[in-house]
Length: 453
Image (cartoon, rainbow, N blue to C red):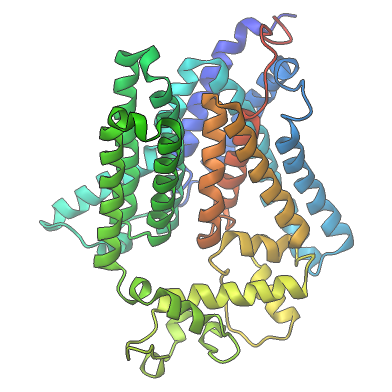
C-alpha cells in the first residue's frame, strides 16, 4: 500500500504538534497534555522515519551522532543492572522519565526529517522556537501595565508562571537557531538579496526577543550564553568576509555590537557582587571544606556571619552556591566515576553515599555536573561526544541544516555548565533538541524521496 501520498498531512500534524509542545512545555500543570502531544509525535515521527529512512540513514559517518545518543540509552540500562546505587529509584526513572525521553528521541528524528522535507514545517518550527521569549515579554508588559510601571526583573520573576531557567533555555536555543540562519543567509545574500534581506531582519529580531526575554527574567546564565553565542557569531562573520569586505557586513556588525552592549549594560546594572568580584567569589566558594554553607539550602544561610571578600563586601550568594556545589559535584564524580543512577536526585544521593553532612534537596545547578553525578564519566563522555560530533559535522557540511544543528550544540555546551538543563522536563527538552540536531546532520541521498515513492 502506498502511504506516501499521506506524508504531507503527517508533516503538518507533526509540525503543529511540536509547535504546541514548544508553547506549553515550560508551563506547570500541563503534563497530561504533554503526554498526549508526545504520543501523537511518536506515531507521526515513526511514520515519517519509515518513509524516509533509506534517504537519510545511508551513511554511517553522518549517523554517528544518533548512534552515540542511542548508546546513552543502552548505558542507562547497563548502569541499572550492574552499577546502580539506588535500584528502586533508578527503575522508577527508567519506567517514567527515560521512557518519555526516548519518545522525544524518536520525535526529534521525525521533526528533523519533516522540517528538511517541508518548507511549511520549517517555517512553523522556526516560528515556534520563539514562542517562549514572546510570551515572556508579553507577560512582562502586561504585568507592568497592571501596576502602572515597569517591573524590576526580580518582581517579574516572582509574579510570572514559569521559572528563569525556561526563559534562559529557550533564549539560548532561539539565539542559536537565529545565528545559524543569519550566517547562511548572509553568506548567500547575493543569490537572493530581496528575499534574504527580510529574513535577515526577522532572525535579528529573534535574537532581540531572546535577549530582552532573558533580561526581564534576570537570567544571568542565559544572558551570559547569549553573549558567548554573539561573540562566536562575530568571529564567524569576520572569518566569512575578512577585513577586505568589512563594509558589506558593517550593519550586521553594528547590530551585533548593539546586542553585546545591551548585555554588558545589564551585567553592570544588575550583577552586583556576582560580576565585579567573580574570580574571588569562585576562589572562595570552591574551597568547600573551609566554607560549609553549601551543605544547607540558602534559606538557612546565616547571612550576618557570611564570608567577606577582600573589599569587605559579602560574597555573592548565587555565585557561592553554584561554585561550591559544582566543586563538590566534581569531587563526587571523581569519587564515583560510574554515577549514582538518578537524573534528578544523584547529588544528594551521592552526598549521603559519601557520608558528607548535608540538608540539601536540590541539584548542583549545573546540568552537565548533575548528569555526571547520575551516569558518571561514561554518560558524560557519550553526551559530549554526541554534541561535539554534531558541531563538527554541521559546520563542515555548510548547509543550513548543518549550521542549525551545530549552533544548537554550540549553545547547549556552555549553557549546560551553568543551568539545570537535566532537571525534570528540561531533560526532555534537552534530548529532543540533541536528537533533532543529530538527525539534521544526516546526509541525504540525492534524488531519493522516500521508501514509498
